[in-house]
Amino acid sequence: MTTAPQVARTLGTDGRSMELKGSVGFASLPDQLVNKSVAKGFDFNILCVGETAVGKSTLIDSLFKGSFDDVPVSHKQPQVSLTRHTYSLKESNVNLRLTIVSTTGYGDQINKENSFKPIVEYIDSQFETYLQEELKIKRNLMETHDTRIHACLYFISPTGHSLKSLDLVCMKELDKKVNIIPIIAKADTISRQELIQFKKKIMEEMGENGLRIYTFPIDDATVSDTNNKMNEQIPFAVVGSREEIVAGGQRIRARKYPWGVVEVENETHCDFVKLREMIIRTNMEDLREKTHSIHYELYRRNKLTAMGFSDMSADNRPVSLQETYEQKRSEHLKEMQTREERMRQMFVQKVKDKEAQLKGSEQKLHDEFERMRKQHTDEKKQLDDKRAQLVCFAPFDVTQVQA
View 1 (cartoon, rainbow, N blue to C red):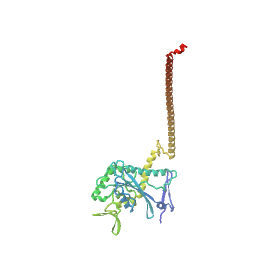
View 2: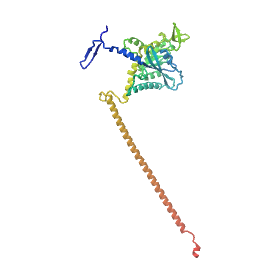
View 3: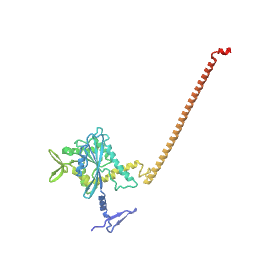
View 4: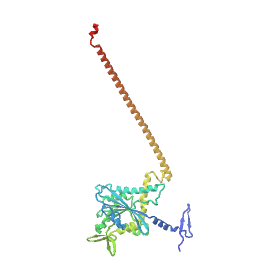
């Protein structure tokens, strides 16, 4: 027989506990939540960052046992760009809206200084889209397609030596914005001993450069042991394949070589199964939760702080949203009045300058008129003097004297 749940709540300074005498029914809340979540479906978004032809699309096909859209690209891309595809998947009665975002042209340019910028801008743009929906007066977050990146699979080229400077710079820019899961791509191209040393070197370089990658949670007793062991396996060395072969009467994904076969889901060959177990079957919800509670909250806090919103005033007093709004509104009105006064003064000054310019032009025209009038008067006087001289020296008329 099920005993009545023990419930305690604190009221006031002395506190008060209350014991239920029978079943009320709120113990079914988890079941209600599950049913509602299943009916709504889930969003999960993966960002694949890695150099061209490192095996990003092939690994995604292997993870979800499908064949997703894949357009081959060359190594001659002028800049880094991202492609996004969204798919509706269903397993049993659970619907998953999966979005795959992949880089193209990453690491192909001679100057790789700003290769991370398009990736950072995309992540921020998805945060901004969600924030704008959240700030709407009439919002519908339950029905909004959540496009925020939940997991970033960072593909490390299997050099066997160390991380490239491009990898360190990019992951440093991304570790505050997304859950980074580093993986060694095409792990079948290096020996087992080289792989062990490569993993060790990668983790040492990440620690030395202060990179913060996603670690599987160990606070849940049901998965803490498994997650703790898997944290020691990071970065996962994986192999992907679209080719299927028949082994033991079953069709499996594998890569065939002249010297043998590498089975994708064979844990003695690579860490593919561990990766899938960790990010899909065990910690998918934790990835979604950390994206919202850590990375998105950091973006939201920084954005609202830049807009002038704060929880505390300058004198360390709690400030409500209404007070902040009124303060920002008052500051905005003062700023607008200041701008208006500045513009009015500028207009008055421009009018004065124009008047002075027109008066100057008028004075120039007047001076030019006086000069031309004086010149005209002088020329007329000269003509009159010459006419008078001509009259004085005119020839003597003899016929008039005889008459």
